[in-house]
Image 1: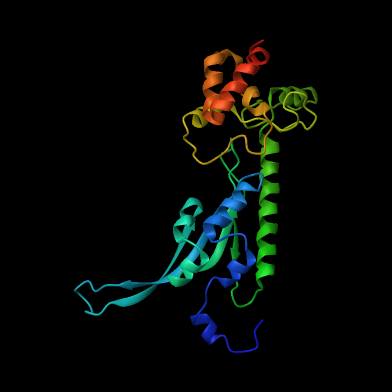
Image 2: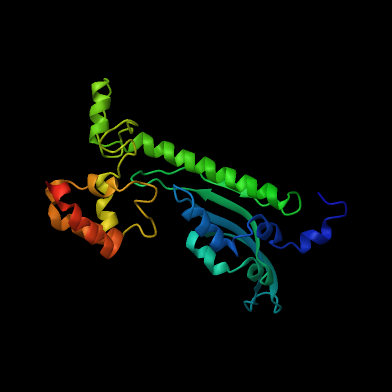
Length: 254
């Protein structure tokens, strides 16, 4: 890409390629937030960084401190701690790779982990941005496939049974029937994950993200009663959710 020796560049690399590739992100924290917020599956983001750490003398070897290259991964919310691109440059922190993937709510497995090397000297910013967003699209499609393969409701299960296929129904093992009149062909979150949502055991995830409002009522067994219903709505949506819940009670429990 360049017509002069790269020895100088290798010793003076910075994160300008990423700053140019993602002009709307001030740093890795912003990039993670934007990727999570504007992608249906809500992918996670990790970054491999390298920097020089000064190791103080331990009193047994040389009395002089020495430098050691450190390579480590930083994940999701911890990316905010790295600051802006300029902050990282000032501290000598270089991003050498990004990794993207996604969990799928209600499943024991998520998508594949996709690692993207940051080729600071051999790639233009636009090329890296295109590689990154293409990877995010592939992850979103993979997450959607996993969801559709595992999150069918009870009506979906009945449909497949009538076609000669037997599934357990609404437990993470039933494919979604795209023409289902009950879940609208969107599937539901398995009941086994309800306690985690109510108790906030899985933090930072919006379980209704990208899903229609039916998720909130269809996954509630009517036998749990109005109190449980209202508790769930308040937990997920706050005061306005409670108001919505009260107005919807005649429909849900009628």
